[in-house]
Image 1 (cartoon, rainbow, N blue to C red):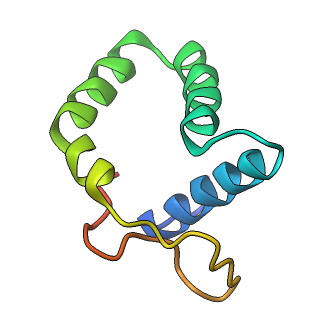
Image 2: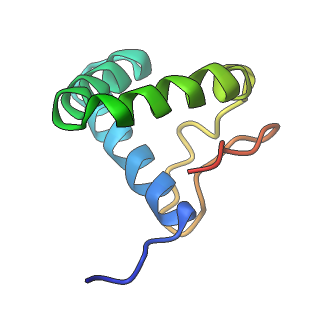
Length: 88
């Protein structure tokens, strides 16, 4: 089995995917919806229950975050200036 990825790497991969989708013309919300729709049909209902609990607990932090947008420096971590990413 492969070594466990760190939360930072996982968040960066997700953010990179969002940016690629945004570059195709989608909004950030639309890009997230595209990703979520694919994830939702591929995971078990138990996993989606956990995901719902996480969104209820942490969405406010993400919603209030001031994202580092358009500073697409490959050597810089992606994140929010004010709020930490929710636990993965």
